[in-house]
Image (cartoon, rainbow, N blue to C red; front, side, top):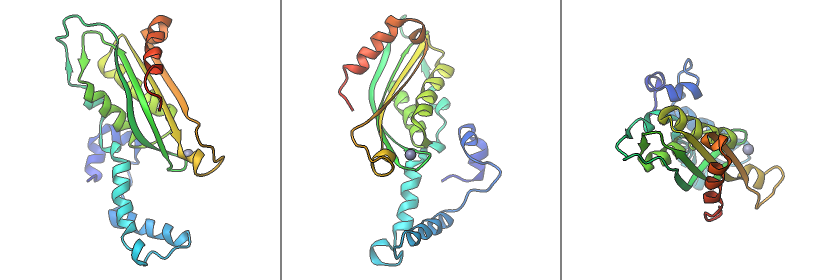
Length: 213
Ligand SMILES: [Zn+2]
């Protein structure tokens, strides 16, 4: 559970939260959800809804558990004995679920993460955890894409980083323009992926040959 002391301890949280105000308690969050249930015209005391505020609090903890993670810390354990391996490493199609910061509607997608190491590599599960740590927050896809790439660049200092994210946005499906079937593609290319079209092309062909979202 988060509390004020973990807020101060974690720089990742400090960036995205308001450290000066004490965090609302679970009970306060439950009361807020109960108000929303009444506000839409429902009776929060009927059988089916009686425990919904508590369930919503637990669900929101899960949706937004990324605030408890420090993505830079996740990447710090690296391996240097790679026998000179300096080719592209690509993790393809990592499934993620996030929520848009404008409507708290689901963003469901996949991320392709590539880098060209400079002596140091990282365990592949760590890249997945970085995607998870940033996606389990209130997001916009453009920032999610940039944060994944920038963190890998900052911590691993590789020769280049490439990230492509493809996702569907439920705020476009269940509200607003009500459009199904459209997905948004964002990318961030750093270092050799930005400077060398062939390197970028090799990465993008690996992205495009992967199973579509
Ligand atoms: Zn939205």
